[in-house]
Amino acid sequence: MTHTDGRPHAVPTIALAVAVLAIGCTPTTTETPDTPPPDPEELMEADRAFDQETARTGVEGWVAAFAENGVMLRPGGEVRGHEAIREIMTPAFADPGFSLRWEPRFADVGSGGDLGYTVGRYLRQTVSAEGDTVRAEGQYTTIWKRGEDGAWRVVLDLGVPDPEGS
Image (tube, rainbow, N blue to C red):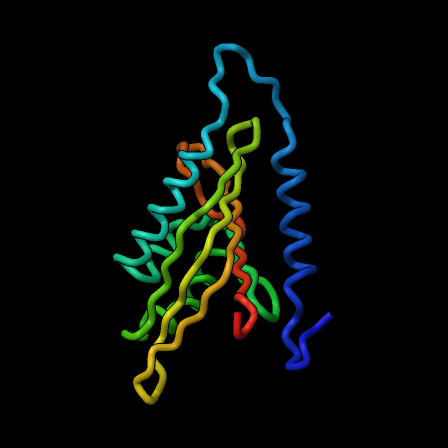
């Protein structure tokens, strides 16, 4: 399904992300009294740190948050891995009028403690050729996986813009 301008609808992509989350966050281990339950607030903090580091260092902060095989879903397909993500995001971050900020609103972590997701709102700003600030807002879902080093890394990032005029 596509928009009249040829862009794919977000619904199939969102459905895919929800299916991945449902499978990934299904309990796979049994918690014991000695094992504390996974803490969604830890994942919220990882997402906030991702936002702050990206605001501070630009594309390098953005890329560093992704797992080596992390994926960004974009119109026209997926972008996989650090080099491809850096390549596609560098032009935006190189623009002095570009800003991308976000705030997680919800997080959940599977009972295994190594897979979770955050959901929140983002604001992307650029400056037009006429000098006007152009704002784009929307929702995002980020799927995270805890690495062997204990750090959370982005394995899938998906943003859905708000409908025009909303």
